Length: 122
Image 1 (tube, rainbow, N blue to C red):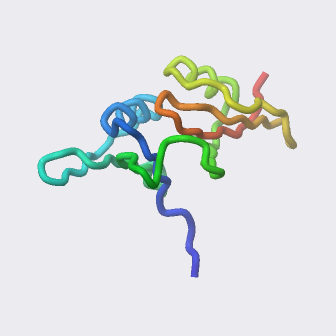
Image 2: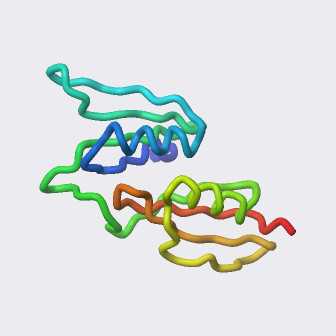
């Protein structure tokens, strides 16, 4: 019945700014969606997952609502440094976990959380 995660939605006040930031962070192209000649959303395809940016409203605000999408990264501390250079800030962690890996959560500049998990390379 359930085949896998299709999309992760980020609810943001400024779709263009948030989508552009993630596009630069991930070095990935983005696509905009318009309604009545106004940008209402943006999409970045990351592997088989759609990362969608939607205009925040009274029902869905930016923030930590209990779900966090985690990126698998090759070099944990290099990825954290890269995200911080783009303006992300540590929220939780980093924590060392099994098999020489670390995990953390980070705030993006738009008030949403994302996580990272990967190898600790020395």
